[in-house]
Length: 245
Image (cartoon, rainbow, N blue to C red; front, side):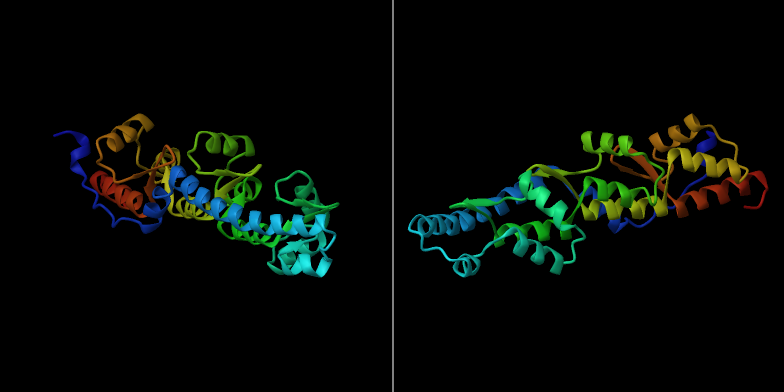
């Protein structure tokens, strides 16, 4: 009988976090965002058109513009601060200048629609910037920034470009952090087995994965093994050898 068939690992219950991470699809994100932007465009266009008409007639007052939902940079920044987004006024103003935060020229003034700010605040609730996502992930994974960018470019970490900025779903990063804490990748699994006294080569371990003898998941092109699955495997391997785990 082949060596691998001596051990049967009980398949664990499907992990809801894994299911959730796998369900994140870039086309779905793009489609949802397109619908949001369509509604935003309609709402903002109507307000801006009305404001421009009043400005042309020199009838647009500051208070009136505010009531219409058109804010100065200072007023928009106050909304952002109230929402708890950690950004300095200088950095915020820079984003307005670079057009990563949309603004409108009404007469001689540059104003920011309140809809735009509320949408930007909402993005921060649902997404990380690329840098924020990297900083979160590296807490649980030894990864450099270049490798992280590579995974985004290959779409093994989902992301979406909104305006001039790329965003990474929070649930994707939080899910990956959970996986890093509760699962081993192949290298870690083999290393752990060797430390526990189970002699196995990486290619032999991967063959067992290929034949589905060791329950595992594939996330972003990487195969991962739940820690409890590996513990069971090690325990049964050592039992065959007459050793204790």
